[in-house]
Length: 225
Image (cartoon, rainbow, N blue to C red; front, side):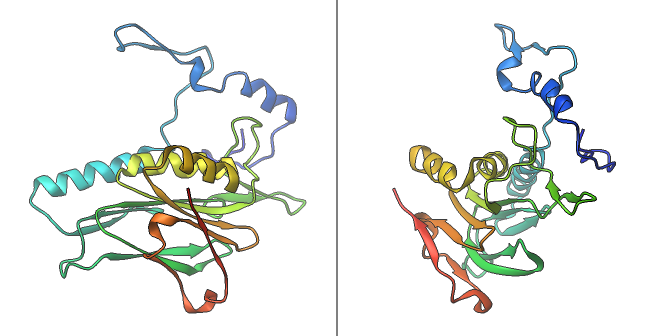
């Protein structure tokens, strides 16, 4: 309805969005007892766009491992997958873009054998005739693009697919929601950049994340458990 899958961008009528929301939700997916058959309500479909790139990164990394590769870095457009460390044993440097100026970057995260997946409103968006910006990350509770104050969120973890899912979901959750989820479940780290260019990171990457020289004066807020 928003046109992100067709390129025919538009702001849908609120009544149309409400109609669609009645068919949104994983709880509406029916799976038989054997786990082999899925039934959906009429007018529904399952879209794997939120995890497909991460899954592809995992599969590509697995194929490289099976071929005997021990050191590699893969770029899948917003998804970075690393296999091992650099050939010299040091960690890979992955740039974190400035979401307000994607030609530059705000920081660098050092990783080895990890996925780094970023979701941001700057990746796919359009501007309406009134100058409002609408991006492709939709809040399933409202049907509108998520507006939580986050401009980009990068998830660092072992699974590209899991990082892909988390980056989208926690973008929608907002800074506080993302922090609470991390505190409750853990298993990954994250870097959040807000509309005010505030930077939040989880404590697990404190030693491996740094701002570039143009942004060194900014505070890095460390989320702790």
